[in-house]
Length: 522
Image 1 (tube, rainbow, N blue to C red):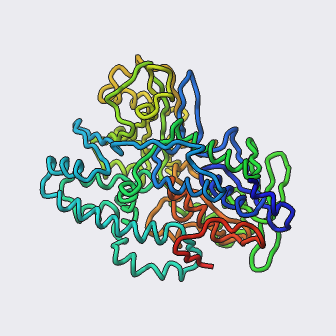
Image 2 (cartoon, helix red, strand yellow):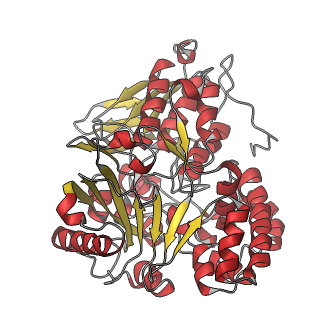
Image 3 (cartoon, rainbow, N blue to C red):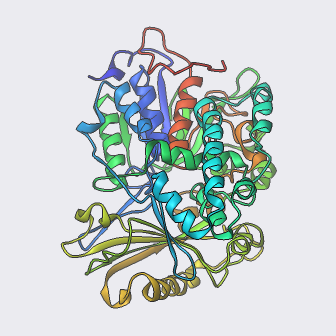
């Protein structure tokens, strides 16, 4: 079934999507499935954006997202095209969701199993048992509004925002995630345990709105999953689906400029120019390039009344990421699939990262061992890993010189892992590589090397976040972690649902999936 071919000769149905991250792939599939003729452009040599795949010495390393939640959002894309996800991809449950290692060596097995959670909380601090149950109920209430009602609807008019203010006040969205957790939980370590989730989407738990506490219930509702073959297998499945239904995917095709011409009240996007000068005309342009980069470098400033250079630069961007990928010749069976290794400081470290923008001597780490679930990602008897450390982005007065600092920082992390979780690590290494905020800036076109684009604070959420339909250029739409609803796999996939609601319907073309409780704002 090539749903895109039915209306291929219609005028007004040509779409160019810039970037093949999960937002770009999802948007391309959605529009191709309902009659648009979509060309998907990727500047790198494989699709996926941040979800790049490195292969070396028999090891497979997912460069980017590794925590899969709300898998129905992936399944939905296949259903739109009359396909079944199971024919393309196998998702495997991960339990515990995370193993959290505290600095003194204590572990907490974080899962969706209420009894196991309560048993551990009771051992740590019995009075927090009731608080945990009340907090989960609060997280569910926030989830019902923040995700189920608002997660895939547009916020491009102030009235859209004003309608939800009463609900947000009722849910105490003015509080930070950490402050909300502290209303229910007294033990300091348990407060850390239940507040780290915003870091998974580039947010500071002490600053971001408590609406991000919905992540805890989202995980409980749908579980945490891992794709057999790695996150790259999800990218491959989506790219294959897109091409099967008639879409065109072009790799190693870097967009140099979004073309615009004078319109009515605003200029209108008319296509893109590639590096080398080739131009692709389009009736609609969807950018999955990082939103700050899109406005700052892909559009001339004279067409940007809202997103001026000053506005782009004065926006707050998420922290940077240092990620090391490494393979070992032995297996570390005691290491969980996902481990959060907390350093000696929590709030102070986050202050260094988000505010002072200095590289601290201590760190907290996320350690990913996918071979705990899928041994095929390493040669027999070996393990594949990545270790991620949140670090400052490149916006500091004196940004970190990662060209000289990278190896020292990696070696310090390896020494810590060897002393704590992975004995003998350095003598067992087969291969290793690392990426830094420089990589995000230079290879992923991320402004200031941020790992998650626009930081999700209260005043940079919903209506106050860069809009999915450009404020400056007609016919230009934005998907990806920097727009509404935000970063993380469910958020990014939902940005494509929002755009799907906003783009014009084509006469006589398939209309896409029905939108539950449809409250489209147009």
